[in-house]
Length: 256
View 1 (cartoon, rainbow, N blue to C red):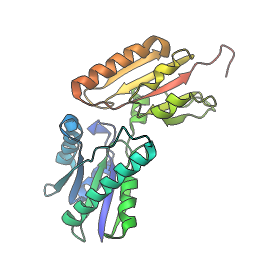
View 2 (cartoon, rainbow, N blue to C red):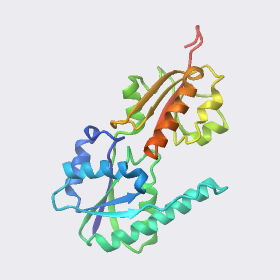
View 3 (cartoon, one colour):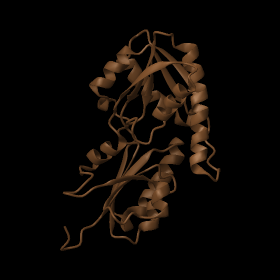
View 4 (cartoon, rainbow, N blue to C red):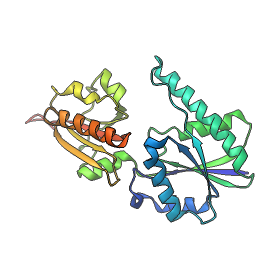
């Protein structure tokens, strides 16, 4: 029976790779990497660095060109489903061709596989087709959300209060009113700029855990334009950007 390991590799700092993840990499015969093109070569380079440090010398690497997602489609959920299905087609073929029946393959998932990552859904899709069989195990990683909090030296929640993890798409539609601490991911349109009139602080980070890391924090109305500029300049320089942030409502003087 083939074995697949879905290994969370953290937000970008090789020092954040867990001992469990390093051990899983040593067990791996074949690593399957999704190539996102020349502009995102850094993402492949980090994985290659980790494999050089932690994988067995005889490991093999199979690169699969990641299909482009239709970002102009009206139905967001359908567009994502179609994109995942294309990924599943390619990875199913790669596993069948390159992983022996008794082999151990691995996917190196950015951050943590449980948080806004498609690998679990793709693997389940492949299994549901029943054309190839394998067992799989998930090894958690240190997420960009955890790294963001550490870099800014803050907690994500305040005493007795919840926090929400959501997307830029949802934040653009509405600022949640029933929670005071909001972690936002996948915000390509800088949705926070719609809420500069609110009494909010922002803790923002890009390329977290890497040598290119950028951190900005302060009252949202004061630093929103600075974040937009920094984000645009970094994206133009590198060709891609990965960022996340925490929006935090300020307490009233006599509040909790």
